[in-house]
Image (tube, rainbow, N blue to C red; front, side, top):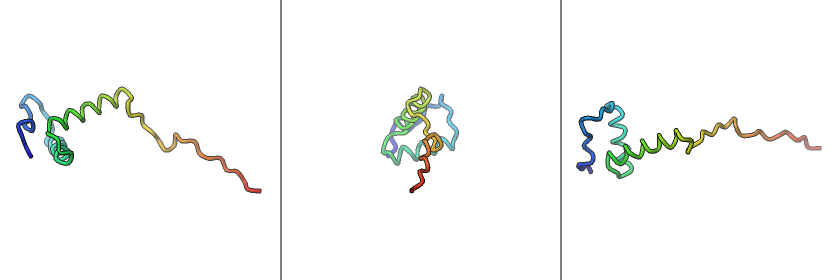
Length: 69
């Protein structure tokens, strides 16, 4: 399912391990390599702006113990 969009420009340097992971993800999503790369970059910037707040299990209040009389 490789097409012209899957050919990364030579000016862009990506580690081979990242390239393989992005390619595998693009195959799983059924999208081109560049579409997947742009999606990852968009998610990164959205995360940086706080669109995906981190939720810690410790942040949730613990229920109080109420003895049964």
